[in-house]
Length: 489
Image (cartoon, rainbow, N blue to C red; front, side):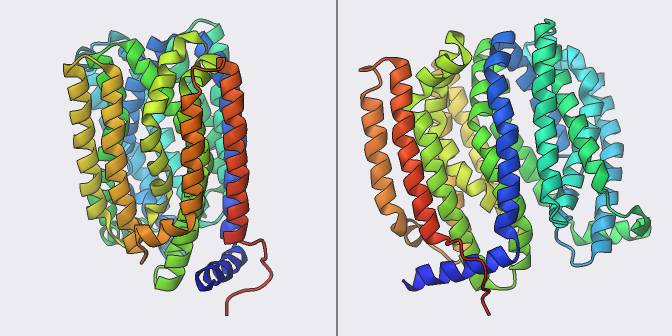
């Protein structure tokens, strides 16, 4: 009762500070954006071949790898200064860095474009490289302006940008796919979505009259941990999460890379809807609470519990229905991707929880530890994929990839809990009943996979996990009551 009362009191405080309303706005807008993607995905999957997705995944890897460097990750520091003028100058410095470094990196990539095609064993990637400078500059500006908007708690702007990104990209993918542009169509579609989002963010630019370039050097030194550690962490994280698709392209085939790419994109949808919304609202809130250990612990515990119950519902459904679900939604040619989705569920379940909560480590200045952990998971992932390639089995490679990722990110989550003053046992103990119910539903669903027709199985599992989700919401209403009119004194 005492623990529950503490959580309820803190929930009222959070609502008074607007954190949960911010999450609601971000999650609602993200849900709309992802619904657009979900509705467009069956059409897009039928307009493009798996090989097209494989080549595009390789280009996305190159783009995102460079995006992790072209700002030196100073955008992560924008929500932190207490003085708005420092935040404005951090934003201006970041935007300037993006332009300069993007130009340098584009020149380097273009000079070795033919060699990149040889390394990847896929010459079609050269057709996408002319889009690189636009993707780097616009993408870097988007990240900086996003964090400025988060600092200002302009969550409706963040939401609008997310929605127009998905609308623009989905519409362009369908139009260009129908025109038969293939790989080029996918690359241009991504750029169109970025441009649409930038148009939204430009409406809430910082007051540039407050720019003082002479202060940039001091700010760069003050927040030097971000380029020193966060940039490296981002690079290692991108290599660990996106390079596997590139390895599939090089070690197996473009089709296998396409299956893996679509699977990762589909399973990432919940991360886009809820996890990202929580992360963007959680960061400024945890930054404000960094000097109050009790507030930090309460906030972290409530967030972690909510994410845990939500992840069991969504990823449990994927675990039970993956192969049938993908063939029904995307077409028979994507059944293999459904199997891959089932194998990847353990990894996504734990990263759905740990990813948005990782901002606690940034606030506490623990970037170095994050870098070491992400480096470990990346090396183990590579080892898993190489083992799978040696025995010439893509499913085994993905299964090992998921297994090592699950255990490393579980260790990461335990460490984050410790930073917040919690233990894994104390956090999970109130949820044991739901864990048991989840296990029963999952086992029964998997046991009946071949006993009923695919569509009937998907619908039945949807009903079972839908009921589990409703029970989870009931649990969350107990944990986080709606009362918002009083504040902790």
